[in-house]
Length: 415
Image (cartoon, rainbow, N blue to C red; front, side, top):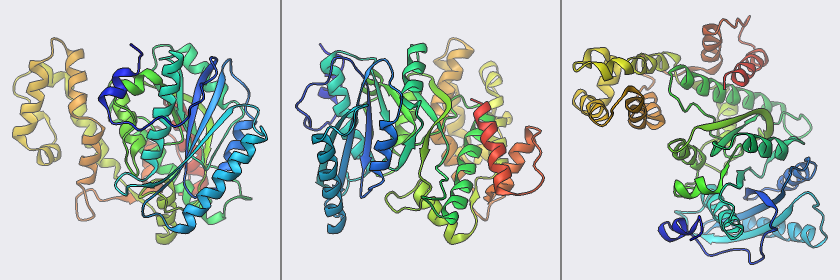
């Protein structure tokens, strides 16, 4: 039985796309969804310039549209597909083997980047299953993200050195090339990136063990791990968030802590949330408000009591009132007691506790505080400055570039 046979028999998948067999030396397959995006040629050019690891590389580009996609975008997709096929015929790309597929008329409830990623990743699993390579690597990139020349080398070497790691995130910095993007887009995206790093560092501050970046262009995993968690969800946005947190349940998520991906900072309406819509929102509103740091402090107070929850029977008074009001007293007592009753020691209890009070709990709790609450959202620079101050990193003012530099360095240091 092949390593992926259970996955393909148990979960909903789609027919095989490519009939050619992969090269036996293939060790990395990179998936790139593409929707109305000619930037894909810049992305592929940057991949072409990368240094070669000790394996062959395939890149699968999934050009995609739905049943409600406007006609001009469908035509644009077809033009991109034809241009990529011309490059294939001329053997333009030498660093990797390029595979291109154009899927059209996807049902509206499925159409989107999650579906495109799933198509490509399922196909990558099929190809590695043919080669019987369960530990081979599948990576995710976006059509508007360029990479460093060491991109494949860093990924290959990291997974070779860390055999136990099943998945890893990759460090990033948005592409602030003034020749490609407007000053307005760049400034807005700096605020958004400050938020991304603030959010991860704030989650890490709570002591939650899976504080990771969840960016569609910045992660990779072993083929077998993909099968174990049931594959990529077909969501129109946030598919990377859900998928990475499913992976975190079976393995510690690693982190390649060198900047190897440079996503575009441009505004976009391709997905409901993420970089593009956030940049658009910041430009329109001329500010960016984010989760209040005080809420993360409440979560930390809750998580800090984990050893005492395990030791004592009456623990409700140890739980912050805000948590109880959000979760309900009866439910929180039952859930913590269930963790205790099924745990022989504090290590098992902690693992079970965090499977209950996970990232989704954190997000829901954060979202329960609106503008009329005790802890409304605050300006991103103010929150980032508070977080930096808590680490004894002093910033002189609310200068975007200064805070961006400091929080970037803090995030790179604190894996």
